[in-house]
Image 1 (cartoon, rainbow, N blue to C red):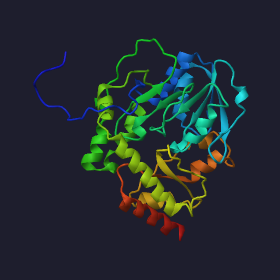
Image 2: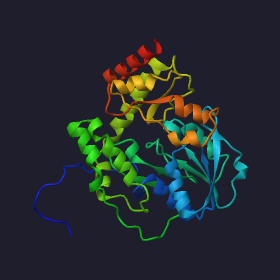
Image 3: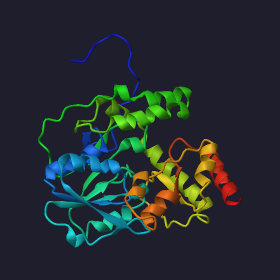
Image 4: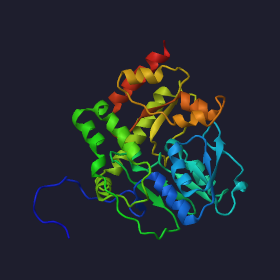
Length: 319
């Protein structure tokens, strides 16, 4: 029974979620565990170029796993005929730029799981289990969406999120640097959590987002950066009509590009440091971890911000 009267809560608008028909869970890694359990998987193939949190559900369930390499264009170097019954290959939609490849993948491979953590706006495909992590795209502390044709009929309890908001609130009130340690703390707090339903709070936040505006802004920002930086960027990247990217991946052998940006309060993540201990230093994956800088292109930024980023990079490249 809902309360009547009393103090006011947050004023959030209630529109449709972008993935309104998906299964709502608490984290992307738990969406993967849901698939493993529901499908009865015994083995999973993972890209070396991935986050080590993917191992958490795999090791918790206790199934076998094996890594595969990717090419310079972020596609599997893999014989898909190896995938047997009760096995699957997980593929990451890198930066939200591999939709065209994934569309073709469904015609040549079965038992493929699509990790759309970096591609929130990509549509799920039939016959492919697909999951999303909205906190990579929006100011929410947790949550995941899952599409699968096999349901797990366990009693899944509801998560709560109110204790995971300090980094988000601090960023608004006192700045990103002040909230960074709390952001790391929140990340760590999600480790080891059981499969839970998405919290009411996270779902309410996701119902209040202007998704069409964000799609437009991300695409515009990506195109603007690419027009100015493609002459310096050796990565083969293309923005297809259906792509809504997470970031602009900029490849540079200049080691100080990232530090120059950081010194000027342009924060760029590193995906993923754990890979350096998984592969040899002469591999594509090692090279990409060391040398790709992920430039922000999201809905918070306009052309003035992007011009500043470009000027910082060109200044460093010209040294």
